[in-house]
Length: 111
Image (cartoon, rainbow, N blue to C red; front, side):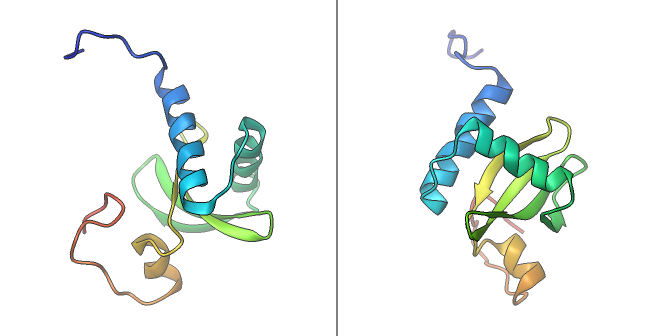
């Protein structure tokens, strides 16, 4: 590593921590590991709405949770949610709403 320090978490643990932080930030939802596992099961069982494929292993989904829908990125290789997207992110707007695409980077994604 460039900094000379080893990470305290492996990639899977780091992604889980990131996903929980984004859920709290974007949906004001403090999720447990069991909540994340439940959301993954919704995706894997076909009880969530597919939005768009981002790559061969990552896809965007809308999952129901406690009376609302959350936009998530799901990594099928790791079988986990890697982040929570804002409900007005371009991926969701593109499929479910207008086709307006921002000209500046939005949520780290540039078209």
